[in-house]
Length: 345
Image (cartoon, rainbow, N blue to C red; front, side, top):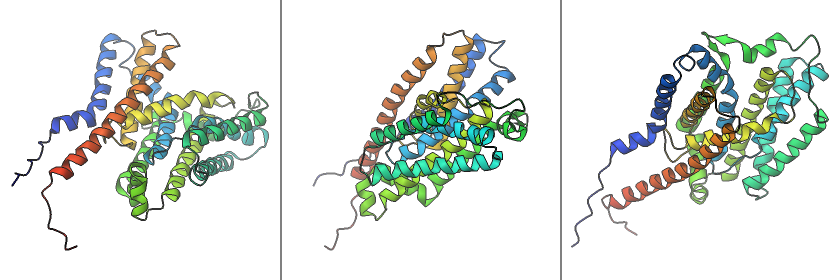
């Protein structure tokens, strides 16, 4: 009789490195840049700049995270962001809408775009890359039609102060956009990690066939994920309009690469191998610290896309490795588990 295979010893240190290595890298970068730039980097001005300028990339990265949980990708994020912030300016400046009504309409429109993406992907059976790239191109066309290729600039009276305060104000001495990011991260963490909806989304993303066998309506939950993503993009569009205070038809595309870099890199942190809100927040933080330090060192403008592109490639590789390692660990655990009682069948 063959002796049972002893279970493989777990290495808690390896798990800690995988889960919190990115967070440790953030601390290390802060220390390195503080030593290299003692007069400019470790200051409140730098902290305020990071919290303010990186809020919208962080929100968009969280928006990208939700469809990735289900195994889909939304490439229309940048185009939708551009249209959303342009529509806010159009409704307030040219149509005379009250800003709260304009903001709510744009956020609802963002959710509608998400529903459209989800329906095309799931019920049209089109790959999410192709489908969202197509809808994104159409959104970009609508943006050009609304603006006629130009910018929407407020009149001499400017925008309502209450609207611009959505981005320019402070709370507890810190820029208020940072609290938007924290609140959104907390909501997504609660939904994805503690509610049945989140567990269903993870099952859909990890094994759609198993989800079908369990009776989980995979199509419906994928549409839900795209809808949530579009809703978050609509919120980001409102904040972008409050920040820039003009309607620029081409600005949204600049946020697409940072969003996916943060979302995919975040899948290697906190819960390695699976996209998660806290990991995305950590990833955006390390990217923001790195970019700020590089900028203060006097790097040229082309280093920003180089940094994001290289980070995206590394993130995809690390996320794939973490997912394979997590799957391998589950297989080993199942193989090494003691046999249960024989089935009567």
